[in-house]
Amino acid sequence: MPIEHRHTDTDACAQYIIDHVGANLRIAAPLGLGKPHGLLNALYQRIADDTARSMRLFTALSLTRPQPKPGLEARFLEPFLARHFGADQVDPQYALDQARDAVPANIEVHEFYMQSGALLHSGSAQRQYISQNYTHVARDLALQGINVIVQLVASATVCLATPISRSIC
Image (cartoon, rainbow, N blue to C red; front, side, top):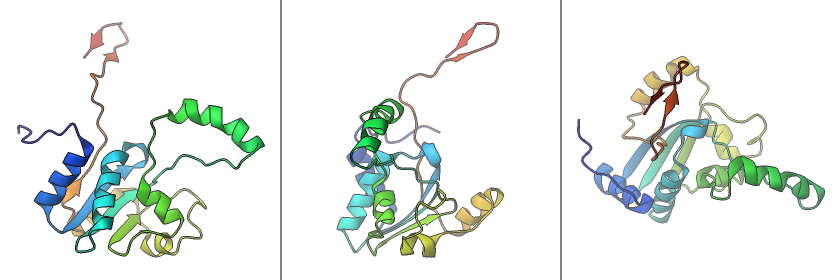
């Protein structure tokens, strides 16, 4: 099936999704590192700014960059964080807001796996947590009427080396 629309601009892609899906987004995003944080942030901000629309995000393990305390902890961690995450790493805004219990009323974030102890003080995260087995995720998402699935995709060509030193691109 040919791709009808390609967007190189995250904001344009977010606007296209909102224009074509309607007022109520029900988004599925993968576990952990496969989330397109830039696109999710653009969708999140647009929905947060327009209370006539709503968004329900279903995902798992929304990781954010650790925030070291000033002083020794910062001096120790900042070089590691710069190497490990890179200077252009973007945290998912919904996860930052969820940790502060500040997700807008027209947005729900349902996670079925969380980093241990990270959201103990977030009432919304505790109320919207989904206790489920990984084998039931696809079934349960289908029951939620998901209308958008997002996935982080690399834009560069990926090459794999075979054991006999041939490259497949």
